[in-house]
Length: 81
Length: 408
Image 1 (tube, each protein chain N blue to C red):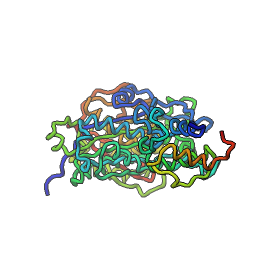
Image 2: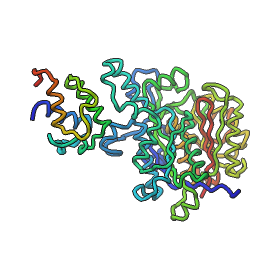
Image 3: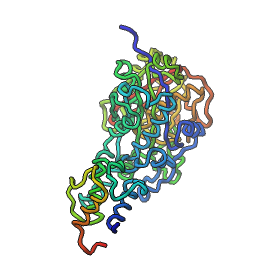
Image 4: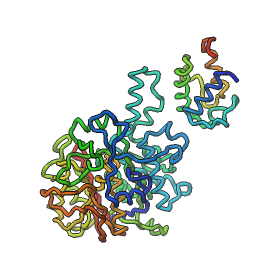
């Protein structure tokens, strides 16, 4: 996957205590036991870590990791590697 | 009217500066050596000593995501509560959770969460403040987390009476059992306020010992040279049931919670009423509920903070009410003052003193204040059978809570 995906995986592991082995692009946040409050926190972390503007309701627990990567890539400057 | 049901204590859990678990705390308190030490999180402050819980690993002791969602006061409470429930022999997977209440005392709440998030707000702006800040810092969340952890869906609340919070919680829990609002109550106190802002606040009030060059000698309840308290942290949790219920399930009854008295000084923001009239009133109420006389009370687990005024007032009231026949001890010499947790930790230690016929010593009592006419246990634990004991807790704001605990 992309650099964005790799960084998001690191954030999920380091900041949200998600088991790295459980993360795949098509896994949902719900399946990683990330509830709506965790999602709000994750979106806040994504905003600051990727320097993007994402609305508070841009993702829900039933969305996949791939969906969150898309949110970032849609917003991020092209120079982000 | 039928007589009020007798309340039994069937489980204990302790997390203190003497260690994680009831046994390590009991052994530490009986050793009589203070846990006061220099504390790196307080570096550079005028008072940089405290009594902190060693080696708590949230991921191991509580769960993978504990550090993300729980302030330390909640973590300490969860560990103590799980121990207490396991000790009682009750099974949260099997019990009727709707009949299980949770009442926990907490004086301050998640002050370290507040402090770190406030720093983010000021230094990097509102965008960097965590969405989990509020559920981590509000004091009621210790009881809320325990409800989830233990599947306890009965009455659920936190009591805040400053340094009396833990004892107030236990007294309130017993009332819930007496009025049949629950069958089991998980009750106690939890506090983790060893934090630069809060310690500075206590320092500015002149409440803390300034003996920072000798941290292990700083907390010295009832000693002539006491000069303030040493802040601590921890949690104590008890499982209470009506004795008839406990006997029916063949649970070992460790002791009885026989009486509770509460009162307010209505005197001063922080200083105790020097006459101690309201303290005396709370003691009398607790003894009346327990149906015991002053002669019956042979052991007192004192509030004994090591501040000049608290110890003087408490000693005056005790000698007036009980005379000098009761063996008095203060655990704060060893454990420091864990604020809202202290009353619950000390209630648990009182149960252990009754069960084991052993009264732990008061650390650092080298020369008892000659103005205090009390028999304070010092040096070594004293082997002595106790049938009726009193555990005292007094909070800033003049809030007093007194428990009478009796042998089963």
